[in-house]
Amino acid sequence: MRLEAHWLVTLVFVAICLVAQRAGRRGPEGIAKAAASLGFLATAVHAGTGHSPHGLAVMVGLGLSWFGDVFLLSKEKRWFLAGLVAFLLGHVAYAVAFVLRGVSVPAAAGALVVLLVPAALVWRVLAPRAGSMKGPVAAYITVISTMLAASVGTVAAVGGAGILAGAVLFYISDLFVARECFVTHAYLNRLIGLPIYYLGQLFLASYGGT
Image 1 (cartoon, helix red, strand yellow):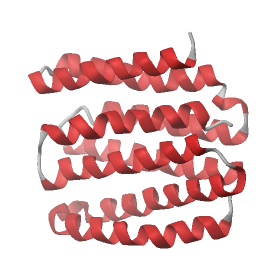
Image 2 (cartoon, rainbow, N blue to C red; image 1 turned 180 degrees about the vertical axis):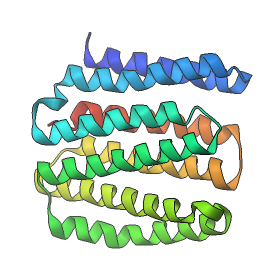
Image 3 (cartoon, rainbow, N blue to C red; image 1 turned 30 degrees about the vertical axis):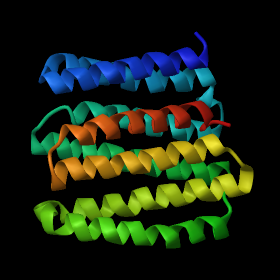
Image 4 (tube, helix red, strand yellow; image 1 turned 120 degrees about the vertical axis):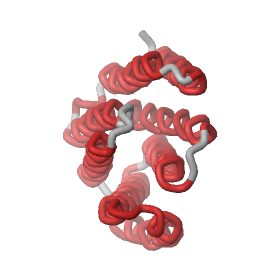
């Protein structure tokens, strides 16, 4: 199967997941979401992403993301926390991958300084609503900002626009997750956020090992 076909199959399952969500069909939604997440794992295998140390770290990040997707299917707080931890560790794995790939420290540091602005804005919105989750939310904002800064650093050092695209899309998708969880429950969050998330993962799966 061609790499483009893996993308197409994954995005078809994303569309099915969104339709099932809209219809309130939890069973089909869960099956479609798990299948879509298997899609980005299959994409990484097909692309040979795991054939280098940094690519192997990307594979770990993708695997943790799959668990995060499955955990977040539940509405229970304990599974939400498990999903949060899985995604946090996934972002750590991606950041490690970018460092192993090669990183420009000045570029990464500069990006991190710039990212302090959206991080502060997001924290200002979420902190009053996070309650007992303030600590995990603060940790998550820190980690995703570091991951994105590391992606800028590795692209500055080695190149690879696909990696930057994946990291940016993943970062943006997390903003929609935060909006859904802490600001307002709306189908629009998933309608926009879910395709962005899967596109980000597909970019990382396809180009993370290069």
